[in-house]
Amino acid sequence: MAQPKAARAADVVAPAMPEPDIAAELDALAARSSSSPTRGTAGAAEGRPPLVVVGHRGKGMNALASPDPRTRGDVRENTLRSFNDAAAAGHPAVAYVEFDVQVTKDGCPVIFHDNFIYTEENGEISGKRVTDLDLHEFLSYGPQRNQDKAGKPLLRKLKDGRILRWEVRSEDALCTLREAFEGVDRRVGFNVELKFDDDLVYTEAALTAVLQAVLKVVFEHADGRPIIFSSFQPDAAQLIRKLQDKYPVYFLTNGGTQIYADPRRNSLEEAVSLCVASGLQGIVSEVRAILRRPSAVAEIKEAKLSLMTYGQLNNVPEVVYVQHLMGVDGVIVDLVREIAEAVSAFPAAAREPGSSEGGGRCERMEAAATAAGTPSFSPREMSFLLRLIPELVQ
Image (tube, rainbow, N blue to C red):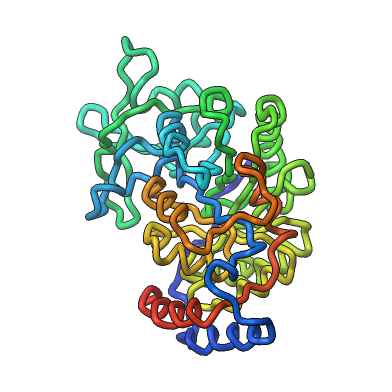
């Protein structure tokens, strides 16, 4: 089993890195693409797969302290209702929903983001590690599918230490991975994040047991649904690739926006090295890491890897458009409908010649790793990037 770390070596510390010269990075990209004929905006996207929109924890995470009511809690994250609401956005761009999978003490994969789950009973607040619960106890938290039963009130601990009542406008019960396969619209694929605690050390045997429990459910219930595995845990990402080769595996990274004890987590260069050495298919990076060093996109593509991003800036349509021009393949977003509508309106989002209206929608991410080359920019696109990106990073 996983053991608590003796020291807080994995605690996040402030990154020590010089401020990048973003304009210079983009100038280098422009110079690299200047050898090809100048093309218009629509032409620049020709041959580039359409941008994929991925619903973060379904229709979006519940940022309880956010000043934006749209991200505080429209529907409870990581529930069947949230996944189906994302699918119901109705835009072809919404090809996947992303969610976090942990495995309970009795070996059942469940969908929940936080490492600890909190409740209040008789005025006392208590928290338990999700992986220390059996399935029955886990499902006893929050709204119940059986309306005759009352679940334990759900609270959430924020990064600043505050514990708030986890209240949303549209409720739903917590769920298992199997229930997601059985109850979510088959129009969307699943981006399954394999969730592990940064404050625990995992043996290979412990990781294997968790991953095999997840794979058992996936193999028994996927039934043709597109699946992507991803994880911040480098060993887990490598191991899930060794245990199966049917579904693509992506390595999640902060890209240096935060620094960890494990150097494999601390830069896009390390992420590329890990993926190439382990036969992974792609990287999911915090969007700020890509905006700080745009040339990394070309390096990732030259390694024949697909690239998705996550982060709050992905809820800004202009940021998403910039990434599309840079060659990013997919964005994980909270404002699913708003971003999907924006992506549908992108002038550069032309279909590949010869593609059919309905075909290949959920296969884009898998195809992107082989289809994407070094991005090239028209003068109009480059001017837009040069004006916008430094402001976004600030």
